[in-house]
Image (cartoon, rainbow, N blue to C red; front, side, top):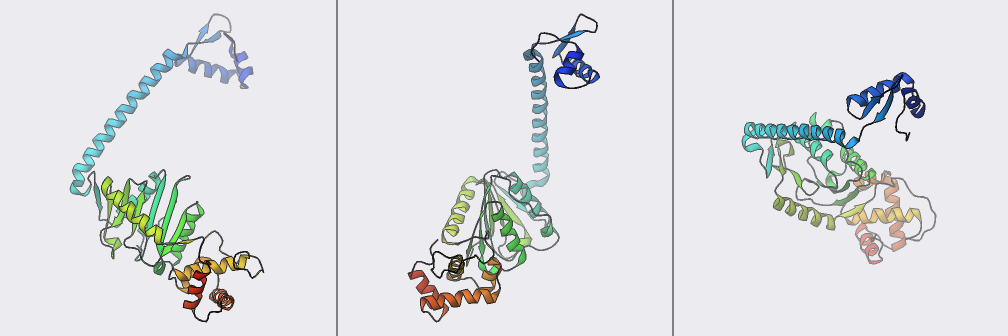
Length: 309
């Protein structure tokens, strides 16, 4: 309402509350120096210039925030004093079995723009690895590369499906040099020992080291084979042309995965098809190409451009 003053009945009618609720609200505003009663029975109320009173409130909030920031700095100093060499500005060393998944969740939930992921076996198993999975926040781009030999278990497939279901991109390659996760190009998580991921991990904060790890990821990403998990059932279509029917689009997906060195078991699991259906696709491709062996199929498919996106 845009009036110079009003009683609590007029205020209640304007905002759609009871007179008693309006009176309580007006008295709360008076306590906050945002409203003031003037003469009359019942009294009328008028607004108080907001800048002085709200300015005081903001000043108090700023002072409270400054005290909280100071407390955070004191806690950080105490943590670093107790942790000793385990936590520095450049590298954290995580040795406890429970520290690694907890720190991973913190870094993942704190990411705001991009997560880069290289995944290869052996995978961490046990109670700590079976915690409720955490996905990236909306708007965060996730790019993952999985090693093909390790992409045959339900855990890795479920993880990949969750990532691509949130708009992430997935690629597969025959060999990955190291397990790695990079968060916002500001921190990187990787195991201390590549063959023993449960033995501890490093959280790298050094800008130079993180930049080098990003370059490593991009190099692996460029060589990896793109895979889509958004269409995990045979597509409709009866046309036999290699570029127009849904069935032959699926065949081309299979041929690309074969060319990347993936095993039939892995391809079937990724595409959610039976081994028999998979082999039928391969046999059909061989008939169209006039090839007898899998090597000939892959070679002729590449020559005809069937392996391109």
